[in-house]
Length: 169
Image (cartoon, rainbow, N blue to C red):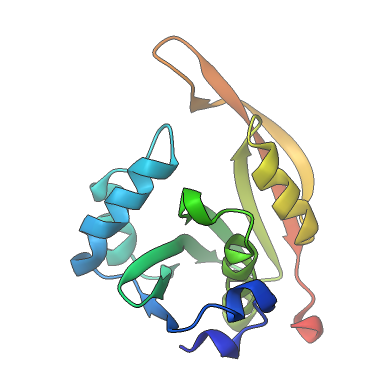
């Protein structure tokens, strides 16, 4: 799917030779490199493989030439979707790529009958929370001790939800 099919902001459109591609098992090596560079507690290759093999999961990747810029993993449920993982190359954060991925998620969710999207984010990840608020998400709960922090401690998750307006997409 061409990038210009989605409303992904001028910063993203300024980059030429960008394209969307559905993640496949053949992509897992480069996905794992970006995942490990981006997260203190990255998903395992098995997590991605399970997501690829499960019906109702959505795994788009944004690429420029052969370089992986970012990806997300989401799943559809009854009248809702759940964002499980979103990753943008750390060198490209703050340039509109995360917003672009979130907009593509909105389109996909509406196409699959979702009326809302749910996500969890580390309480310490205020940059991501800011992006999600900008995209229309609201905090609805805290999940205590949800994420591993280190061998002895855990970190709370902020649960956020966006109510989708199908006519606005």
